[in-house]
Length: 140
Picture 1 (tube, rainbow, N blue to C red):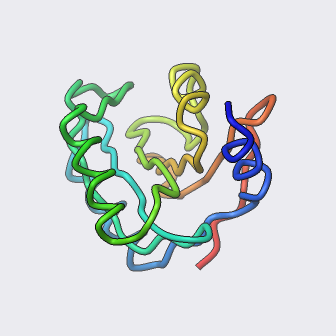
Picture 2: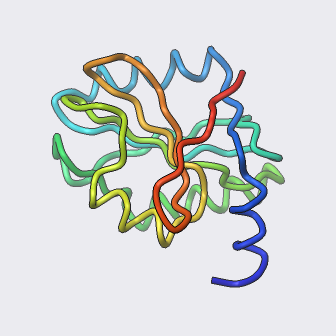
């Protein structure tokens, strides 16, 4: 990992997500049941400013994959909007909002905040992967 990404991970101690965005993400997640939902979070300085709702091409209740086509589209959109990808969002329809072993693997190659919505508890939690999983606060 390059120095910039290392420093960015150290600097990211929280993520700011508006209540209106939480509403959109929770409704999207509930509508995607029984499968996991997923989205890319755009913004600046740990503030989510825009959501890109994506398709879970696995159609799975325990895993998600965003297509390469949608990932490319997302990064182009972020660049056009002069924003960066500040987070990856997905839901756990039938479990707590805590990263699975699969999530941990993908967190290593996507060093941004991972926001997870629990379909059971209806809550949001956010994490980074340092040497281990670290929960970070979600603020408005």
